[in-house]
Amino acid sequence: MTTRIDRAAPETDDVTVVVATRNRRERLRETLPRHAAPVILVDNGSDDGGPDDRPGVDVVRLGENRGAAARNVGVERAATRYVAFADDDSYWEPGSLAGAAALLDAYPRTALVCARVLVGPEGREDPTSRAMAGAPLGVPGDAPGPSILGFLACAVVVRRDAFLRAGGFAPELRVYGEEALLAMDLAAAGHRLAYTPALTVRHLPQPGGRDAGARRRQEVRNRVLTAMLRRPPAVVRRTLAAGWREDRGGVTDALRMLPWVLGHRRPLPRDVERDLVTLGG
Image 1: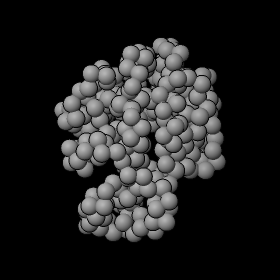
Image 2 (image 1 turned 60 degrees about the vertical axis):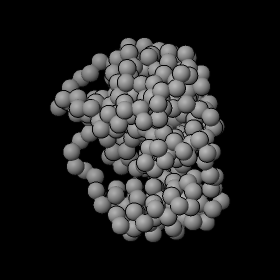
Image 3 (image 1 turned 90 degrees about the vertical axis):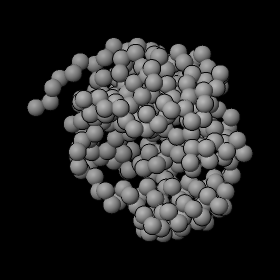
Image 4 (image 1 turned 120 degrees about the vertical axis):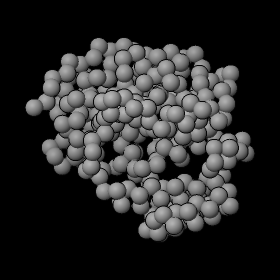
């Protein structure tokens, strides 16, 4: 039996929440009402009947699985200056969407703010949030928090125009690690990306249900593709070697896309590459 959750009152007119989903209709009944802003729900060809129609939710049914690039459809459809992303098993805590809009208003060079993520009913801090809080890249005066060069997609609010100019999430990467390339491209365009722990996202992952081997293969594939697309040859070689040790199938999948990579390779500016090296990349 699903517990009824009343829809949260909108707290800002400046943010649209974009949720990409596939085969999670039961979990959506719990999370969708918690977003205190208009929601665009993009269904990646669910075969479980798809999400319900709900008041205040604009449902886009793609009829196919586009992976993370489904979020691009939602951003294009949004009419607000800022767009927040959420997964079908996550939601933004009260005050966070309005807080993100205020920060982006106050820091015009910042194109992306990343919230603190609390996992599970008990609210465990995600290790990625702890790492970001360490501020290895420092805290610029023209940003609302520590500089970052990566993010969890379910925990960010972006400037719609900057996201679209950067090309959004690359369809070729599909899912798992798709954020890294977009983070690099936003930074290469001169934007700040900031960790802002005053904003909070709750993530309620369900145990099991995913193929761990397939996920590992896809993650390796995407790390190799991202390196080949943006990083220097020495980094590409290290990434290939590490990927070969972890999952040879993932490296093979990436190398099959070499013609596409060569047509889209764009090395990063020196300052962005330097920051990636500082982060251990």
